[in-house]
Image (cartoon, rainbow, N blue to C red; front, side):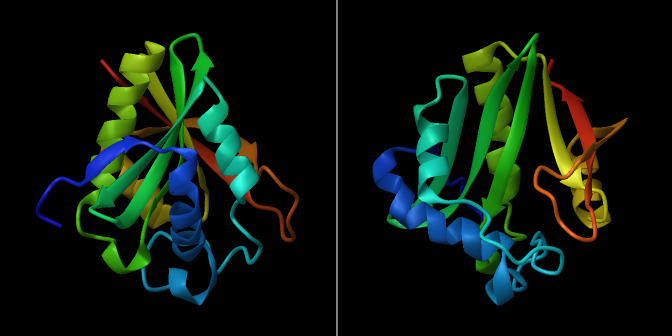
Length: 170
């Protein structure tokens, strides 16, 4: 993608169009069209509309949506964790549009939102530790492994673990 996508806070009205993009990006055969999926590791639903509504309604959270006109391109969530730390999560781009720079713009927008809305001086994220290509993607964008490893947020068999990445926001 050559032009910068329109990125803004999502509204409840955006969610019916956004939710299927999230599911396509993370799960199932459609996710395999992109390179950032979890389809080979997880098969359950990634999220639901109630969870997304909660992200929009939470004052310590910003769900940003990227659009090109009426087309939803992807999203990212930023959460205030306090003490100058923000958390980046739910970054996704429609699998058919990945590798076009949309993710880079979403990450930059998330970092700006963390600084402006939450006064964050550092951004933290977690990545499934088996996703070495995704960890490398974030490392190229200034994130570094903190040395901390966390349990996957829901029980799965075999168990999965999350690598914690951190970037100073300066």
